[in-house]
Image (cartoon, rainbow, N blue to C red; front, side):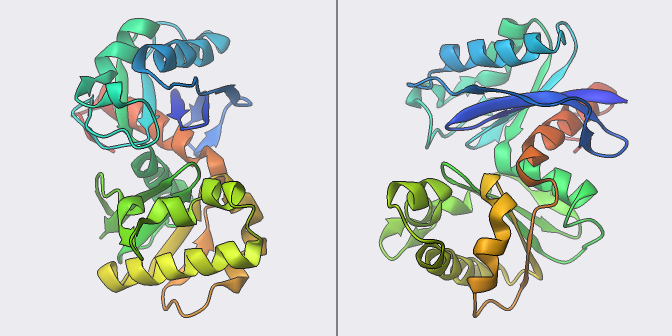
Length: 254
C-alpha cells in the first residue's frame, strides 16, 4: 500500500508517495525550496505544490516539521518563521491541500523510518537517531519505542546551541573541512552519549550520503555509529507511515 509523505525542512520541502511494504519511495521525490521567510502560509503553499505534483489531492498526507509538534500544533520554530509557534499547523496545511494531514517532528519521522526499515531495525536498546541539516534533529528510542520531541540539537555545548556549531549548515557557513567538522560532531556525540548511554547512534540527514568522509574520524564514542540507510528520504518515509497509521488506527500509532 502506498501513502504520501512530505518532509518540511529549513532549506527544502520534499515529498513522494511511499511503498509502505518496503519503506521505499514509490516515485522520484519532488523538492522545492523552503520560502524565506518560512511563514506558515508560504510553507503551506509549497507543500500543496509538492502534493499536487503527484496528483495526490484529497487523500491523507503525512508531513514533518522542524520543531516540537504536539497534537498537530507546532510548539517551537528554531529554523522557520516564529509564526508557527502555537499554531494548529496540521489544520492549516490540511485546509490548503484539501485532505487530512498528520504532522510530526521531522527527526521523529526519520527515526521511526530508520527503526522500521533502516539502520535501527531490530535494535531494542537505546538508539539515538540524529539528523544533520539546517539544524540537528533527534529521535530517541528505547525498547523500540519513540520518546517524541527530544530536540537534542538545542543542548548547550560550550556555551552555544549545539546545532549552531555541529549542524551541516554550520559546516557550510564556516567553510569547515571534514576533519574540523568531525571534531565538533565528535564532541557533540560524546555529550549526548553521556546523557543517554545509547547502544547505537544513527546519523541521518543529507550529509549521511557522505558518511565515509567524517564518521571514520570520530573517536572516543563507545556507542556504535552508523549512517542512516534511508539517507535523506527517511523523513518522507516516516511521514507517510504516520499518515497511514492515523488513517487506520488511533492517532500516534507510529
